[in-house]
Length: 451
Image 1 (cartoon, one colour):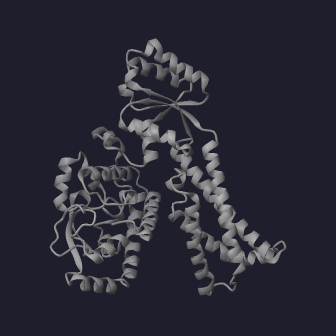
Image 2 (cartoon, rainbow, N blue to C red; image 1 turned 90 degrees about the vertical axis):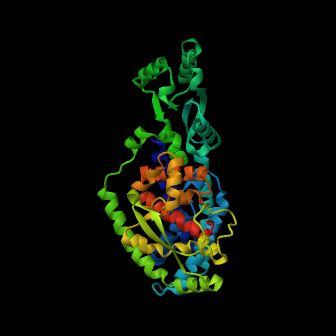
């Protein structure tokens, strides 16, 4: 089972378990409320209203990253994530039952008990899943390679139990040259003999001596598993290091052709959502316009030329967040060019609202690499190899890089990292990934963690 397939399996398992827990918590709340087994009629009376509520709750869990890397890598305390999510769900539940007129029930005690029970049971369920991931059967790996990315992957796998891998040995590929017949081959065969279901992750076959490659080729016919290093690296870190990228890699991995199963639905979604969201966003316009005018009395909108798909220049429109006549530059921390109201608009992404018009026109999409200033493009293309690959697809309101790099790039080096995320998105783009990015963007906006 591939690493990405394994991750999706665990996400599905966690999601299914959460749903079971939510329904069991409802049954338990009815039991504790009436101190007897709930009748079929009583349970059905609550089943459909709570089912709609549970769908929203699961969406809140998704936005909170309870099914993403935050849980999978164990970077955040599951207790804090669940507590924040359930507090949000409590507010949603109150609005759902007490402000809507669709259902006759207005559960108070039942809803309170359900929220408490579901929180406790969800916590136990997540801890149990974490236990399985940490102490369950792991695929044993032998890592062979060298270099920064190789060391980064080896360190990550050693520190994170939840990936389902156990590193048995790490071999420097440079040391195999000249020592293979003396002790290298013997060491590898001893590892194979001692460890069942062993898999090899080789950084680069081109760096290995011919006799080692020949040996591994023969082992392949004996059932030995070899895991692609680059694929494993990208699945775990979810970006493509520029050290992987060259002409051959791009031709083999990046498609510039039209995919009607993806491009047509994506464009249809762009049109519908930009039209609906654009109309809804008009409610905020008077307040934003008034705030900008009170702040410094300057122009409300900022219209500038950006680089779009296939290097086509288009005019992007945003609410102005910087001082009048500010120059295009990388935004620094506490940048003096950003106005007081502009800082708020940037954190909440309200300055982006006029770009729904750019999406509706077709200059941009909801999801894609962020468009660059014309002034920056020439510089970045001269400093960063393959930087122009970003222009293969439409730029976006939000993108994979924006959900992973919460702060915009402030240097060529940080822009290189952004490009690594953009290449990952271009290579793996799909409607599922687009939805994931949109939901993660919602989380970022709600936390106002951007700039």
